[in-house]
Amino acid sequence: MEKASAALKNLFFPRRCPYCGQVMGFAPGCECAPRVEECRLFGPSALLDGEGRRFAFLDGGAACYAYAGPIRQGVRRLKFEGACGLAAVYGREMAALAAQLEPGGPFDGVMPVPSTKKERRRRGYDVPLLLARALSGALAIPLWDDILIKEFETRRQHELPLAERKANLLGAFGLRGTAAVQGRRVLLCDDVATSGATLDECAKMLRAGGAASVWAVVFAATPRPGARKAGKGERRHGTE
Image (cartoon, rainbow, N blue to C red; front, side, top):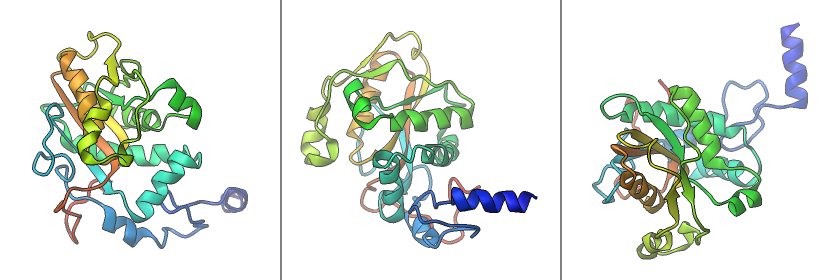
């Protein structure tokens, strides 16, 4: 009976790869799996370790994957094709990585990189918020989604030269009160990071509000030159 029920469910709601989107049926995995592993970044220092990118306010952080191949396909499905269910899958991977970052104990709360009301209306949903909810549940920490706000729309970061990205964000973020973050260890989350300027600007506001530390975890990133990929036999976060 259970097999028949599963067959019917698969007929009307076929299983799809959470990355490339290909219909998987009853197959245990997708043929894109080797390419997904090629994108996996190694260790919590792969993105924000201060070697290739100097941050003024962010204490550190990491990305699960390089933004390429099936990972890029998956993120685009989440952001532009309404595949909101992917946020739960990606959020669990981010949580496994964030657990390796915890400085001096568990994080006190998780915050999504905020967007404006206009930006949320345009898309119909808030991707960083969906990821933050998944992280909150997986790590059993509070979700702080009403403290850090975006004051106005900015030009898209990936469309700008690196030298202009920090200036594009000046004054864009603010705090609704500071009591909740004073002395706290804050975990920021976003779907994709390029230069990391957005995360650092958010961290600036949180540190000004009294946060003890601000760390970041993202699902994918444009990796700095020389960032290590997971090698054969090495520990790969998110798969433990």
